[in-house]
Amino acid sequence: MNSEPMKPKYTLLGWLAFAGLAFGIAGCDGNTTTNVGELEFTNPLHIPPLLAPTTDEDGTKRFKLTMQTGVTEFIAGKRTPTWGVNGSYLGPTIRAARGDRVAVDVENRLPEASTMHWHGMRLPAKMDGGPHQMIEAGETWKPHWTIEQPSATTWYHPHLHEKTALHVYRGVAGLFLIEDEESRRLPSQYGVDDIPLILQDKLIKGDGTFNENVGLTPFGLLGNKILVNGTYDPYLDIASSQVRFRLLNGSNARAYDIGFTDGRSFRLVGGDAGLLPEPIELDRLLLSPGERAEIVVEFRPGEETILHSFSGGDGIGNGEFDLVKFKAAPSLAPANPLPSRLTTESLIEAPPGATVRKFTLTTESAINGKAMDMNRIDEVVPAGAREIWEIANRGWDHNFHIHDAAFTVLDKNGEAPPIYERGRKDTVFIPNGTTVRLAVEFGRHPDPETPYMYHCHLLYHEDSGMMGQFVVVEPGTEGQVSRRLTNAGHNH
Image (cartoon, helix red, strand yellow):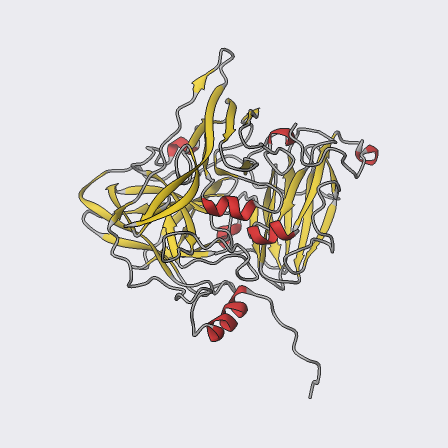
C-alpha cells in the first residue's frame, strides 16, 4: 500500500465541493450556486451605447471617458452604490477601425486614483494603462495610438496595483471594438444583429449594496447574481434570423461554460485577438475571466431560448446559471450566409529556434516564486519577436493574460487545445496540473523604461502578486536594459 499522503488538487471544482459541505451545498455567503428556476426574464437587456468621437484636425478620433460614482438599481427597490464610466455602471462601447488614429481623454472623478487599461489592444507601453499609468482623482489622462491590429472585441478596465479586482467589480469596464473589412462581412448592425454580452457575477446584500470581499474564496469573489451588460434577470428581443454575440467574461473569478438550454449549436467566429480562419460549429464554449468570444446564432420566428452557463466541465465546477432569454419576433430580417473563410490573418507560429520562456504558477501570489514588484523587470523581449511561452500551473486554477501580445495555444499537457481555443488569443485558462505552450507575437513599440504586464486574470490573484513585468526593446539591445525601475507607479 502506498503510504504517501494524497496531495491536494487546488481546483475550483475541488474547493467548491469543500465549500458545499461547509455551507450546506451553498455559495460562499449562504446562497445557492445556481439561479435556474428563479428568474422571470422581466428586464430588457441594456445595450451599452456606442460612444461618438470628435475628430481632431489631423483626423484623430477622440473619445471621452469619465470614471465616476453613482447608484444603480439592479433589483427593483434596491439601490446599489456603483462605479461606472460616463454613467453609474459599466461604460459605453468604443468602436474604431484598423488604421484609425485614436485618442481617449480619461477623466477620473472617482474618490481615489485608478487607471484605464486597454485589454487586448496592441499599443505603446506608455499608453497601455497598467499600474504605471496612474490617474489621480480629479486628473485626466490622454493616451493616443494608431490601431495596428486585426478586428477584435477588446475591452477596457482599471489595472492598478493591488486594487484592480475592487475597481472592476464596482463597475468600471466597457468594450472597445476594432473593425476592418473582414469583420464587416459578419452581422455588424450594433444593437440589432451585433450584440455585446458582458457577463458578471455579484453578491448583493439585502440592503442592495455589493458584498465587496473580493478575496472571499481562494479564487476571488464568486457571486450568485448574474448581470449581463449590467442587467439582472434580462431578456432580449431578437429581430434578425442571424445574430452575432460578442461575449466578454467581465467577472473577477467566475468562469462560464456557455451553451443554450435547448441544446442548439452556434458558430464561433472570433476569439480574444481576432477572427478565426473559418467558422467552427459548437454547442459549448468555456470562458474564463477576461476572455472574449464572438459567436453567430441562428433564430427562427417566434422561438425562445436561454443562454446558459452549465456546471462542471474542464474542472471549473463553477455553478449553473441562466444568463439571458432570447425572444425571436414573429418575423425576422433575413441574413446573408457566413463566409466560409473569415480572415486572411494567419495563426501565430513560432519560428525554428524561437526563444522559450518558462513560467510556473503556484497559489495566488507568485510567478516563478516571485510576487509582483513594481520596480522589477522580469523579462526583456525584442520588438516584434515571436517566442514560445510555457506556463506550468502547480497551484489553484488560474488563467494567463499577456499585454500587447497575441498568441496561439500550441498545446495543453502535450495535446491539442480545445477547438474553441485554437484562434488568436491573449488570455488562456490553465487548470491546476496543466502545462500550456503558447506561440506569442509581441508588439513593435520599443521602450526599455516602461513595462507591460503578464498575469493571472483572476483579479484577486493578480492583486495578490501573480503578475510580472516585461519591456519591449530594440532587437540586439536586450543586455543593455536595467532590470530595476526608478519611476514605478508614476504616469508618463
